[in-house]
Amino acid sequence: MVKEKISLLQFFALLNLFVFGTNLVVGSGLDAKKDAWLAIFIGIFGGLMLFLIYYYLYTRYPNLSLIGYSQKLLGKYIGGFIGLLYIPFLVYAASRDLRDVGGLLGTSVLDKTPHLFISGLMIFSIAYILYN
Image (cartoon, rainbow, N blue to C red; front, side, top):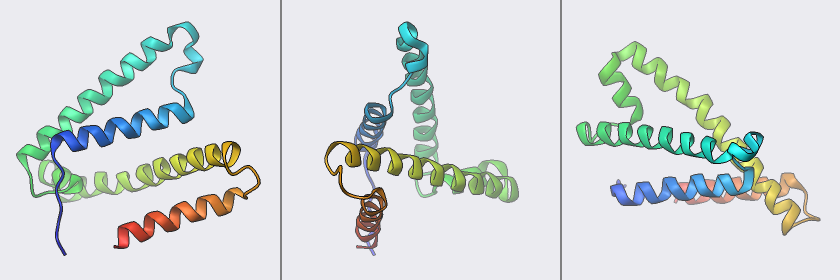
């Protein structure tokens, strides 16, 4: 199997498209009302800092994954534990995004289609793409 790598620009574009797409569906800083720009600015700053940390780790350890970084820097057991903490976080984020996009499709385009079918079709499509 060929292991593909993406460039920094491609990663940045994917990250931005994901954030903007989620922000359009969910909304961001709505509780802040007229100060919503401040919440968005703080979020952009925090995300940019996190991106720069990930990029620095990627350039320092190009052959390791995110869990590999944490094990290399924090030791086998603490790094492995932190790597395990990523699993529920990523499952939660993926399920939330699946629910948001499925809800948007269900209310705007496929209004008579059950939500379970829409979500199942998206999960099957993603699994098929990842398998191939």
